[in-house]
Structure formats: structure tokens, C-alpha cells
Length: 111
Image (cartoon, rainbow, N blue to C red):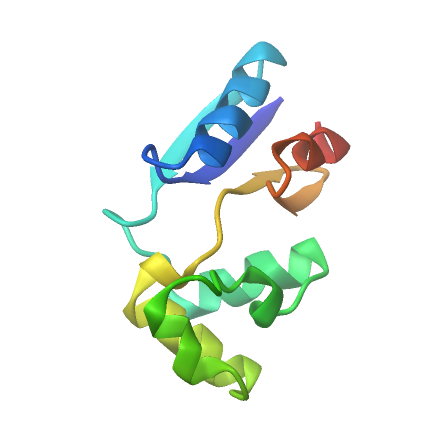
């Protein structure tokens, strides 16, 4: 099985999700999204495939998220593309779908 994880190695939840993928024997592509930011279109595609809104994928604890409290999904996607620290992590994609790994065990649904 192939999997892509949009990963921040400094995040414990992201590391846990990567370990779950490795333990499952997945052929994992790791994308460090802070080094290789996702485009607005790619973020929109991932959230649509996950069945969540961009607001659900917003890392609300970040200072940059506070001004987005009442923002539209389009504005949130624009902000995430411009400042990828605003993306909640990890996102994992397989042929079975996309899951936000909060909690990391949620990715088992698409393994």
C-alpha cells in the first residue's frame, strides 16, 4: 500500500502517524510541508477527499489563525498556502482516502 504523509518531524502526533504507517508496512512518501509547502489547490483537494472543511484543518493554536476566526474557507486556504504552519498535521493520504491524524490512530481507517 502506498501512503503520503504531510509531516512535521517536530510534531509528536506526526511522528506517531508515521510510525503507524511504517508498522503497517506502507510504502510511505514523506512530504515535509513546512519545507515543501502545499498549493492552495492541493490543500483544497486533500480536505475535500478527507470530507472536512479547511477550517477543520486549521491549526487554531497558531497566532496566525486568530485573524481567521470568521474567515471563509477560501481565505483560510489562502492563508494556509501562504503560511503552512497554519496547517494542522499530519495529513495522510492513501488510495482509500485522506485523514487528519488527530488522533494518529484515525489514519488506520484508510490503511
